[in-house]
Image (tube, rainbow, N blue to C red):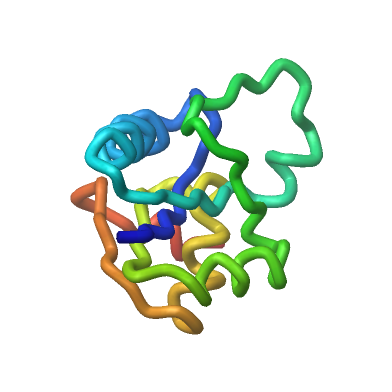
Length: 116
């Protein structure tokens, strides 16, 4: 099975850490996993000393529309990892209305993500 996961990839994200562990477990069971990096453009444009989780594959930027659509074309499942920090999850909010999938909510309160 090919799984496409939308998640933050920077090490400051606990959700990214969890998604990385899930990705590794799926890969060890023979599944193919593609990652869409969901951090806001502002976070990516200021990459000084930003460490990334090792997903074992290159992450597609959420604003790389063709790259995302190519990954979706072969995916069996789309998963969104969503928390309350908008700068970590901007890509999820952009793609979710266009590409429905399984949403994993990681915070009890999500009001701040919509504040932006």
